[in-house]
Length: 317
Length: 308
Image 1 (cartoon, rainbow over the protein chains, first blue to last red):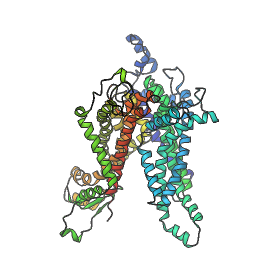
Image 2: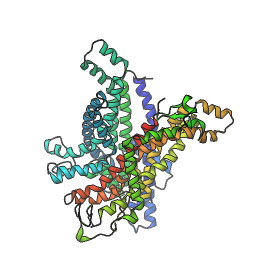
Image 3: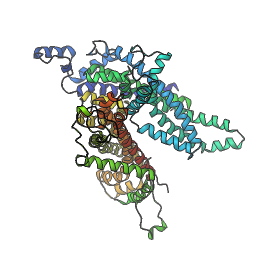
C-alpha cells in the first residue's frame, strides 16, 4: 500500500508541475503588461521600466517562472493589487467558505443520489427508475446559475422564507454552524447539489444493476440469505466507486462554484475570482486558480488511494 | 465509405466488431452502419422530440432578423418589465422596455453560436491530437497525453473562467477558452478509441497492401473512430451551452446591448422582485436547449450501441 501511494505521488508530481506552469502563464496570456492594471495612465517610460524591473518582468519567462515557483513553494503567492494584502490569506479565507458550501452540497447530493440510484437500480424500468433517470438528466442539463435564481424567486422573493444572498445576517465574510447561518446556506447548497445528485444517481443505478446481475448475488440467494443480507453485499460492492465519484464531485463543485457563488454573493473563492477578474487583479486570479487546481489534484490523489484501500479487487501494483 | 466502416458496428467503448456475413444480405439490401443508426434513432420518440426542438430553435435563430415581432434593441422607459401575456409584449418586456420575445429569438443566434462553435473546433483539434497519439503510440502518445492530463487537473468551469478571465471579456475570447476546455476531453476519448482499433486485422491488411501511415490514419482509422468521437462531442454541446451562457452571465462573454441568453439573465437579475417570471425566461431558454442536446445525444449513443 505504501509503495502504491509512493507511485501515485510520483505520477502526480509532473501533473502538479504542469498545473503550476499553466497558472503562471495565465498572467502572461492577459493582454498588455500585467502591470498596466496598476500603473497610472500617464506613467513615464522611466517609471514603467523601474516597475518592470522591480517586479522582475524584464527577465526572461523561464527565469520569472523559477522565481515565482520558488516563492510559491514558500507559501508566498504574491500581493493582491486591489487590497494590498497577501494573496494567500485572501484565498485561504475564501477557500474555507467555499469548502463548507461545497461539502454541504456534496453531502446532499450523495444522500439523494445514492438513494435514487439504489431504488432505480433495484427496480429497473419501473416508474421510480424513470423518475430517477429524468432527475439525473435534469441535474446535468439545468444551468445551475438559473436554478439558483429560480429558487431565490420562489423561496426569497415570493415566499420570503429564506435569505436570498450572503453567508450570514451580519454581512460578515465567515459562515458559522448555527441556526441563523444555516438559513443562509440552504439555497446555495441545494442549488449546487443538483449536479452531483444527478451524476451520483446515474452511476449508482448502473453499479447496482450491474452487481445484482452478477453470479455471486444469485449464489447468496441460493444459499438462503435474506434480502437485507444481499443488500449489504451490494452496498459493500458499490461503495468504493460511489465514494470515489463523491470525492471527485466535491472537487468539481469547489472549482466550479464561481457562478453559484456570484448568484448568492457567497464569500468564497468564486466570489474572489469574480472580483479578481473584474478588477484585473492578476496575482489574486493566479493565486486562487493555483490553490483550487492544486486542491483538485490532491483530492484526486486521495480518492485514488482511498478507492484502492477500500476495494480489494483493484491491483495495487 | 470504406468496407470496414459499413460492415462494422462501432460501440462507444471503441470496440469494433465485424458483422457476421448475414444470410439475408443477398435478399435485403444492407442499410450500412449509419443506416441502422438512423433507423433506430427515428424510432426513439424522446430523441426525435429533442431533435425537433433543436431544429426549431436553430430555424428561429436563422430567421430571427425577419420574423421578430418587434425591434429587439428598441426600448421604452415607459413600458419596462411588462408581465408575460401583455397585449403588445407577448412574453413581457425587459428592464429597458425591450420586447422579450424578440430578444429571446435573436438571442438564440449568439447563444447557439457560442455554445456549438467551441465543441466543433475542439472536435477537429481534439480528434487530430487523439488519433495521432493513439495511432502512433510510443513517446508521441506519452508526451501528448501527459500534457492533456495537466488540463484535467482543472475542473472545466474553473478552466473556462480562468482562461477567459485572463484573456478578457469578449465573444472571441470566450470561444477560445471553451475550446481549450473541450480539446483535452475529446482528445482523451479519441486516443482511447484509436488505441482500441490500431491492432485490428484491417489495419494490418492496409499496411500489407502498402498504404502509407497517413493514408491509413485518414481512411481506416478516421472512418472507424469518427463516429464514437462525434457522439461524445454531441454530449458536450449541452455543457458548452451552459458554460458559454455562464461566461456571458458573469460578464465575460457577450457585451450589452447584444441579446444573448446568459447576459439577459444577468441584467434581469435586478428584476426578480418586480417581475420574476420574465426574469427567469432567458434561463429557461438555455435549459430547454441544453436538455434537448443531452436527450438527443443520449438517443444517438443508444442507437449506436448495436450488439450482434
